[in-house]
Each structure stands twice: as C-alpha cells, then as structure tokens.
Image (cartoon, rainbow over all chains, first blue to last red):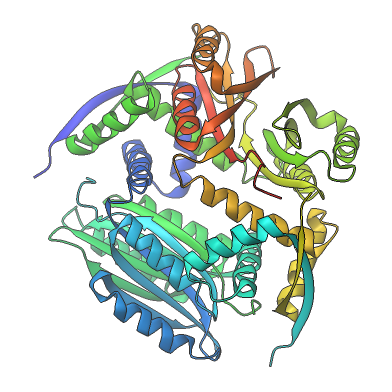
Amino acid sequence: MSNLTRFGISMDTTLLEAFDQLTQKAGYQSRSEAIRDLVRDYLVQSQWHDPQAAVIGTITLVYDHHSGDVEHQLTHLQHQHIGHICATTHVHLDEHNCLEVIIVKGTSETVRSLADHLIAHHGVKHGELVCTTTGANLH
Amino acid sequence: MSNLTRFGISMDTTLLEAFDQLTQKAGYQSRSEAIRDLVRDYLVQSQWHDPQAAVIGTITLVYDHHSGDVEHQLTHLQHQHIGHICATTHVHLDEHNCLEVIIVKGTSETVRSLADHLIAHHGVKHGELVCTTTGANLH
Amino acid sequence: MSNLTRFGISMDTTLLEAFDQLTQKAGYQSRSEAIRDLVRDYLVQSQWHDPQAAVIGTITLVYDHHSGDVEHQLTHLQHQHIGHICATTHVHLDEHNCLEVIIVKGTSETVRSLADHLIAHHGVKHGELVCTTTGANLH
Amino acid sequence: MSNLTRFGISMDTTLLEAFDQLTQKAGYQSRSEAIRDLVRDYLVQSQWHDPQAAVIGTITLVYDHHSGDVEHQLTHLQHQHIGHICATTHVHLDEHNCLEVIIVKGTSETVRSLADHLIAHHGVKHGELVCTTTGANLH
C-alpha cells in the first residue's frame, strides 16, 4: 500500500488559471493529477540518463514488407534478443506498409541499442523509440 | 513500382568519416540507407505540423490496474474512438503495472487529442505519443 | 502586483521523495519552485502550438566565417527582419568558428520561419531555435 | 584546408521530391546543403551523449528582475563559473521581464549542470539549454 503526502504550493493566480485551462482541455480531472503527471514525466526522463537504469521502451517501426526480406530479418533480430522483448504487435496498414510495435525491457543502454539496430534496418521507413518506465518506482 | 533517382553529394571528408562511424555503430549497412532515414525522419516531423495530415501514432501508457477503475475507463475511451484505433497491445509488467500500446490512425489533430485524453486519465502513470506515418507517401 | 493562490496537492510519498532528490541535485531551493517551473514549461510549450502567439525565440548558429560570405549574408538577412530582432551576440570560438545568438520577437510563425532561413544558410554548420516567452503572462 | 569527398546516393523519386519541396521552403539553396545539415545535426546530438565531450551550449533565461535579488544572484553564479562562460547578452523585454542568453563552453556534463542550476534559480520563469558544438570537428 502506498502512502500519500499532502503539501501546499503557492502559485501566481494568473499562472494557475492558465494551467487549469490547458489541463482541462487535455482532459485532466484535477489539478493534482496534472501536476503528478508533470512530476512523473520529469522523473522518467531523468531515469533514461543512467545507462544502467531498468526501463521499458516501445519501438515503433513502419516498413514495406515487399522490400527485400525485411520482415524475416526483423523477426530474426528480435529472436536474438528474446530475453528483452515482452511483446510485438503487427498492424497491416495497407497493401505494402506494416507497422510494428515492439515492447522491450532492459537497461536503457540495451533498449537504446536494440532500437538503433531495428530502426537502421534496410526497409524500415521510419522508427521511433519511446522511453517509458516499468512503473515500479513511479506511484 | 517505385522509381529511383541517383544524385551526387559532396561532403567534407572528416564530416563524412564521423558520420560513417556513427551509423556503422548503429547498425546501418550503407551510407545511403542512413541518409534516407534522416530524410524520412525530417519529412515525418514536418507532416505532423499540419493538423489535417493523415498520420499514424502509437500511444504508450503505463498504469496500475489496481488504481480505481482505470482499466475499464481506458477501454471505454478507446471504444468511443473505435474508428481510429487499429490495435491495442497489453503487457503485464508486474503484479500492479500494465503497459498498453494503442495504435491510432487519423488526422494529426485527432490522434494528438486522443493521446492527450488517454495520458490525462487518472491512474495513468506515464504516457507518450509517437508521431509516425502511414508510410503511404514515404518510400 | 501579482496575486498568489495557495492550494494543496497529495502525492505518493515515494514519488515525492524521488522528485525532491532530483530537484535538490538540480539546485532548486524549494519544491514549489520546481513545480512552478514544470508548470511554466508546459505553458510555454503549448503557446508555441499557436502560430499567432507572441513569443520570444533565441536562435543559436555556429558557422565558419571563412566559408564564402556567410557572415555578410547572415547580417543582411537579419537587417531584412530588423523589426523582429532584439539583439545579436557574436562569439569567436576559434580561428574559424563563430557562434551567434540572435534574440527574436514576433509570432511563433515568424520566429520559426526566420530560424529556418538562418539555419538553412550555406556555411551555417549547426543551428537551433529555443522557443521561450516574453514572460508577460507567465508569473 | 578541408578535403571534399563526392559520393552518390539513390533515393526513391517521390521521397526526393517531397524532401526538395520542404527544404526549398525552408530556404536551402541546394539538396547537398540540406543533407549536410541533417548529418551535422545527427552528429551534434550524439556528441552530447558523452559527458566528457567538449561542447558549447547556450542557456536562455527569462526572469523578472523585480523578483527578489535574482539578477544579482544570477550574476554571482556566473562569476563562479567564469572559466566556462564566453559571453552573456541581456535584453530588456518590458518593464519587468529580462531575457538573458549565456554562452557556455566545457564538457557536456559541466554545461548541463550549470544550466540546471541557472534554470532552477528562484525568479527564473523559463529556461532552456541549446546543445551545440564548438564547430571544431564539424565541417
């Protein structure tokens, strides 16, 4: 069970009004929730600065499955890192294009390097790594 | 079938050597492939500046499924946007934490707004949107 | 004179401790100050989404002043936008390299476009735009 | 004197046309120049991953000079790092707000830490670090 701490903040009224307006537009139901999200985001970003931190990343790839044997090779590369890969989702975008999302667990160094290699693959049109978190220390 | 254009580039030798070294480390098998990736990345980024451009996004969410009825509400929110959602992958990270990746198709405006609302949801610890592409105009 | 609003936030104790640790390392003297900075940063980022918002940008350029007449042309380009440029600082980095920081005021659309054109200039090795704020509505 | 290497690239014609269109809009006068900029940007980004790399950063601060003795303290902090600071530019934005751009030379670790401390300072409304380069190895 997690413990909550309550604390007070003072903020310029104009600043707070502008913040409330933005976060309501984004769908936040409370000011506290919006501030907790900013804090968690700041922590996740800093976690990734440590190459040995345990993180989760999602790697998004767009590729043309008619382009050489890219599909086969991406699968092969993933099998070589089987211990780090949680799941892979494949979506058929159109006759040619596929989108694949690979969820990877490991040190930030390992996840970054695997992302680099997948994105660098011939036939991959676009790739991005999202640096997120196992959630374990992030309440 | 796609047409290829061949063209020449001149680059300072020292700059080129540094680039070759970096891209080899990342796993690129040719200099052309690495340059094509930089070009495609530049195009994808600019696409997202147009709110009406047809794009693909992947939304990564980390949440604690014990936190209120977050799981139920995220599912509900996704069903309201069923026409835009291609697929959802769910990974059980530990006893508490879940990671969900939602693949969304639509205008960049729609995808951004849906991402905002999912990330703003109470119980979602961390969320990120990847802006990628349908691949359709990106060879 | 500005008005302050005081309000309470509840946050998981572990999350708060991790945040306090990070912000102390960064030199923040209070938790409130760190949170206000996250809020202001979030507001500044959103301001830049509106092409007509009045903003301030700083454009950093690195160039070799021996490369063609780049210095002359950058000066010429700045004079054409004299109404938007607040100040320019020039630093001689070594025998060849110069760093120039140009402080620009205008709509976000204007500032972005001027930054694009300066960075695209032949001879400019590296350029970056910082999107900041006039501070006027940001207390 | 620098040596040039010429090399050929093949690119899908549609991709190349889209790239040419974007770079012309941004003001690039040749395709080679635009590609060199993408390459240099990629190199500068990777340089900053090494905490010991010699870099240049520009730190942009917006603050209200009526807020406590922020001006005095920022000056004091800069004098403590006099060996790393190349130049400081100050612009009076309005009756209250100042913008200061500080150009800093050092290892990426040193520059980041100084930026953190300046931005964390009470009274600083917004701050950003631009990670650029001494230009020395970037032709």
